[in-house]
Image (cartoon, rainbow, N blue to C red):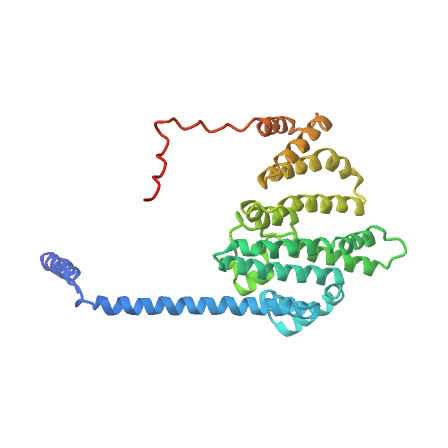
Length: 340
């Protein structure tokens, strides 16, 4: 059926007018006070739900971090839910994976790395939820110290792999796989953690600019998690953190037989860390000790790339402190009058 051109124009105009009129109409007035009260309640409930989920996740990870078997069980659950969810024959496929990885997941080196990963994840989640970050500096320092005690274990693992003579190829393959998994746990950011992705914890992690997110990075943990609060408190333990870091790095080179790195460490890296230590000596009130330290470095390492910075800093330390000008008699306050 066709309409006359004039009739069609009238119909289109009517529709347009109706649209304009309908668009100008509003709904009945809302009860703003009631909605706002409801919104407050909804927001409070949402916060409670989020807080409960966070506490549950932390409790779950804490429980798993209590021993190697519990930690491995949580890891396997995370793998099953993230890598096999939605796959055909999920149970059978996961069982095959578990059987293939059983030897790797039983290695003491990998389980040690897993426990440290979970422990640092809990510490990080708790740190994000707190408004007192200084309370976490001691725990972070304790974590770094404990992590350093695992270095001999990991270095023996590397030695086992390196010296393959008279070793079964399957044993070497197991240790190689364990090293790969260990590196994923300790040498990658928590943002990439299997557990963070599985439990959706990313928004509950602290920012990386004021908290180290790599569980195996001892220098980063000391610099971000520990030293800022020791500096603020003028705590002498600040100096000890540099001595601890230098010892950790030196031991890794020695035990790892990294002769090619020893010269670089002794002539460049260690002096650089000694300079940072000297700066922090001055920070905690040991200015004379700091000046002596830098003076010795200037004489010992004149070819160091940071030599100019050292000289500049030493001159600043040796410069006499500017004394405050004496108050003029006119500006001096009046002496209090004796009481009657």
